[in-house]
Image (cartoon, rainbow, N blue to C red; front, side, top):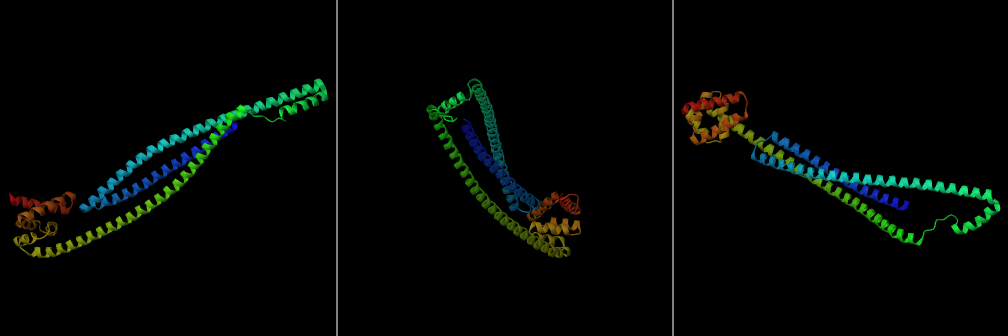
Length: 317
């Protein structure tokens, strides 16, 4: 019985080892998800600080969607982790109960063995005292062949009952060993896949970083070109009359025309030029100025824009 219990405890230990390995796998996956989330959040934070075009907004939307998917995956893995932890706790409890039971049985058998030895000593002492050495030797010669020199004999019906059960335990033990080996191989394969995935993510992040750098450079170059156009037009507009200046600014982009008007030192002249522009072009410039004003707080530029718009509004009245 003790051997059966010992084998059963070994089986439980193997089960616990397998479940612990699964638990570590889940924890590792959660850590990878958290690492990916941090990278996504960093990219998202960087993009939010430098929003300049519709493309940036699309990238922000994609990054936000990626974060939500990772959070959903993390919640699912956390639930799986909780179930796996409960499974490990249950196995620990079963192992503890079986171990305690085994120890108790060992103690009981030890006590029984001590009692049996005590009875044998008492019996031998009684024989020596009652019948003397001759009778003791005679009994010894008779007793030894009967008991088979103290060896326990397994009865046939006991062997028939125990042997199939032990064979079944051995079979289960071998199956668990194979399962553990498969689990280790699967873990190794999964780690390789995760490593490849990590390399792929790093590669894509590098490509995205290069694209972002390229977009930033293109935007900076575009801004520099626009600034040069603004400075060139500013020199021309400053010397021209409002009608000529309005006609000139009607032919350029609203953003450039708006920046030229903002940079003019005279608010009244800027308002007159805006009023003399083509109505459609003037409307686009006014929209640009209003958008820019909303982005600014109490700054000189905001006050200047308000002055230009106020002048145009007064002219229209």
